[in-house]
Image 1 (tube, rainbow over the protein chains, first blue to last red):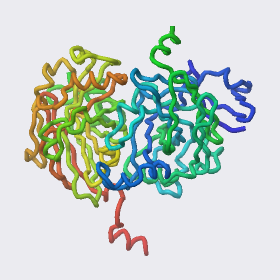
Image 2 (cartoon, each protein chain N blue to C red):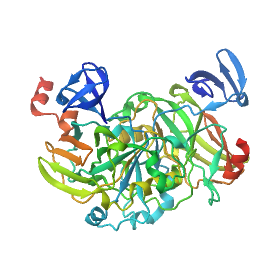
Image 3 (cartoon, chains in turn brown, orange):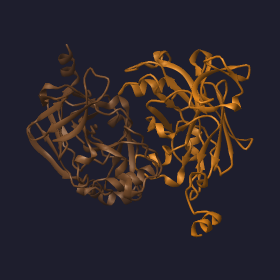
Length: 262
Length: 264
């Protein structure tokens, strides 16, 4: 049984819950529930920062292009981006496919949730500043170039499902050894592990907080594995991260979303 | 109306300008130097524009872009009027950027340019410092250049929209140690305020408290530790900032005296 924090729809505060992942059961205030009996809100409220090209395979895919224009050199420091507040979405809520876009990239990211003000951390004690971990679906409109910030591709409403909960840090023995799996309509479409991170979690936290403070409740994404699966309208997307559970969302076209809300 | 947020006598207060002094919400009238100025409101999602003045783009050897070059900033980077901004010891080129900040007043989605100002609540000034040494060509300008702690002074005032009849015709000036180093006018923006609101709201929702930093004109110069940098916009105010060094943050080599203390 693992301890986690969840935010349920209609409640202002977060609740402490106990999860039995294998059985799909949750204990809350002494009562037992099945997963699908509960309606989750995103469990986070701080700023969400993504990390670009932190999977070895993602950088390798760019290959020699990193030495050519417009990049001209391999990245030196962590490359970050922000998933702004309008993008935050919750477990089992739809992600809307914008008109004129055929499919969305599903970015399976480990979300590192910050527990207290973190400035210029040392790698040795960086993990002490982590409150826990969550699953983040860093959704993007497919784009090849990473030269300019991808606001139009990454910052659309609802493009960042988070959850269903935050598993407390102590429950995860080694955040640098977690399998991530993406299923679309039940088919396994991507498998990777945080063992493939260029900057493992503690190192990433140290290098990021060297120039910017992370505050309690902020979330730093460890990175998105290469070859992000694509999801079309109607597709059921499930991201599993070892020890954390699964985050599920359906992709809907704008038309389908309107019908659903009627 | 010009509104500020300040710390005074053990609490944080809203305040308005009153005959060159500040009147706190609780009625106290205090000198503007007697308070600690905070950002005048809590910035939510903050958009910043790169290369949005043609003369500045040329100065950096870029063509003005065909689509707005937008990047985002996090809450860690903002500080108030009369604040201190850290210049790391190892950098060669750190420059200020005087920018008109447009504050969004209500949710905006698919707004047409003709209606754009209906979604604006007011304006302030931002100094969007950049440290060019850290530029890399991935999601450029990268956050290490543009989202550093202390590197975005904002304020002093939130100025109501109705006090600024034409935000697209305001002169901007930056002074370093009293000398004018940057001059421009908001009329020279490549993408004006209504365009930016139409553009951003065409693919995402803008919310109350979101801010658009509209870019900076030509005139970037390197600033050094000890420099006083004032970014000024006509009708909006003067935002004062001081550049400080690593030593204040306990970064870098331990001073000789301290080192000898430690060994004894």
